[in-house]
Amino acid sequence: MIWRVVVFITCLWAKPGFAGHFTHDRIIGFSGDGRFFAFKTYGLQRGSGLPFATVFVVDLAQNVWVPGSPFRAGRGEEAMAEVEAAPFAALEQVRQAAMDNSAFMLRELGIRRPATVLYSAGIGQVHRTEQVTRVFIPHPDHPTAQPMGELSLRLSGIPVSAALDYCARPDDLRGYRLELLHPDGGAQILHEDQRIPASRGCAEAYRIDAVVSAGYPQQETPVVALISVWQQGFEGLDRHVIATPIPPRPTTTTATATATPQTDLNTLIADFLRGAEPLDVAELEATLPLRQQADPAALRWPDADLPPIARATEIFAARDGFAPHGRIWLSQEDVDITPEGAGGPMPVSLIRLQTFNLGAARRDALMDILDADAVAPLAAFGAGPDIEWRFVMRPVQGMRADIVAAARLEIAAGDAVECGPSACTTPEPLDTDRLGLPCNRLAPTEVNGAATALGQALAMHADSAQTSHWLIEHGLWQADALQIIPVRSGASQACWWAGQRPD
Picture (spheres, rainbow, N blue to C red):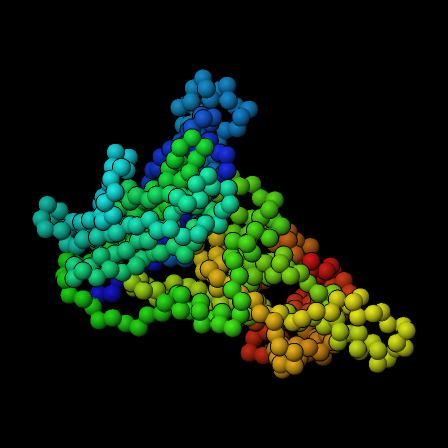
């Protein structure tokens, strides 16, 4: 049987200069169908002694935190005297506050199914450097007999680049690779970092602490590994926790299933970005204004819940900015790939954002109907090149559309490109009235993580529009307005406009 294995990550944020601490964890449980998993982390900050607690609720099927999760509670410096007088009482109050905050979600998702511990190492084993962890799946009818299955997991620290610039010992930073070992000597890569995400902090080492199943393990019972992440802290190494769900092995047979064609993520990236200039993902994300203003101690970034096309738009706006007159043709292709060794699919979004600067075309159109002296010089129209952005994104816990790779290229002049119902390079706005599409004004909204009007609009409508293509016109219909048009099979589906420039 080919296993369906998908790796998911839940992270805590490490703040530069934050007092080091040892994070304890406690499993809350699974939903009845095993889709949702919840656990709690808590402790006293080493140095300040202030208590903290966080409840994580994970959608295992979608590889994301359930919207609204995690739930965090803590005490600030104003409570220092009270905490110092009774630190463990304060910790218990904070733990209860985190549970109270999450109670409605735990209740709605039915997270009351207990977890069965299949393997547990504990802090006393953290010094051990063995990479392979053997986890036995007991037989449900005769637990003391021969196990019905076994998981052999190999966890390795690997040197990769980090998305942080404040780590005290950058040469010691490590990502991780998790492999499933087969009885025939083969290995399946379940997860392998290409870079250390900023949300994982200054990670140096990893250890598998526990492996649990949803209730007593059966053939299709979800299994979750809790892994310690040891990070550089203010006073030594801090311990945080990530969760990696893995379906259990159903039998002890050593027969190897026939391999099926698999798609490698790196190959997908190389094919999609071919011909474009690769960009540094960490540098792109650092340009987001809301990222720069965010609290580095927060558990998630402000843009964590943006859908792929909205996040791509925000990156483009922060890096290139919108031309005074332009058109954007935005497309999203969602594919499921099977990375090497993983029997189950990984959802990946391929985003193309083609932006056309129509400043010169607008000026030429005015020159045809006005005297040359009445038309401003070309520089006033913001003339510039046409640019294509490409993004490869996938969901991870804490980020709905994590950027795996990105690239940028200049669109060659004279290339005939169609933007759905309109020619990309025409200076005339799309006549939505002729198409029978009244353009409705978008109500002013503030979507967390979106700094532009366009990002806000796409964040609100991307899921409900059920389309993979969008036409955006800015500075064509009115100087201070943009039109946003979802396109399906070449036909315009609706029209919205915002009474402000997208940037």
